[in-house]
Length: 131
Image (tube, rainbow, N blue to C red; front, top):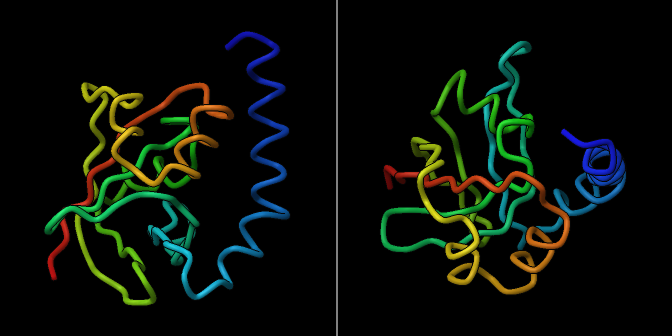
């Protein structure tokens, strides 16, 4: 990864990890993706933007396989998603063949703009919801 992209990644993820995520996780309307920590085995809630379409929930990761929640999905694809205050269980699927930029056009505008602006390695994720 070029140095400028690495610096951008470090700056953005530090801000998200220490400022934005702790605040937004507390908002009842915030959509959360809960994975299981690949090392700790503990629940790891991550604020995400995405959209439910039928029995699927779609999102785009800004940093692809560098994102901790993506690594957690690779270790255990069973997840929970909190949508409008209600938890749903499901199985996450990483879709590197999907056009993530085109997918962002179908997802909520505000989050999609941030992902496009800040992201460097976009990766589409589909969660098949059990309920």
